[in-house]
Image (cartoon, rainbow, N blue to C red; front, side, top):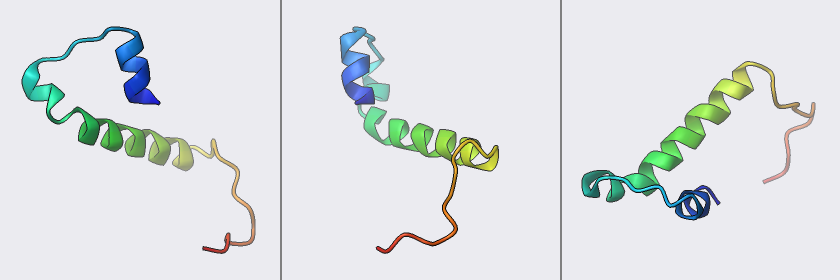
Length: 51
């Protein structure tokens, strides 16, 4: 969804960044989720979810 939004906004990046954009977006999302998790933004259930 993030890649679609970047395309919709017609954002352009240098070719060296474009080659690594998908990996970088994954890292950015992981960092944001980790920070929000530590801040208590997400509520967690008492029971672990079955996997």
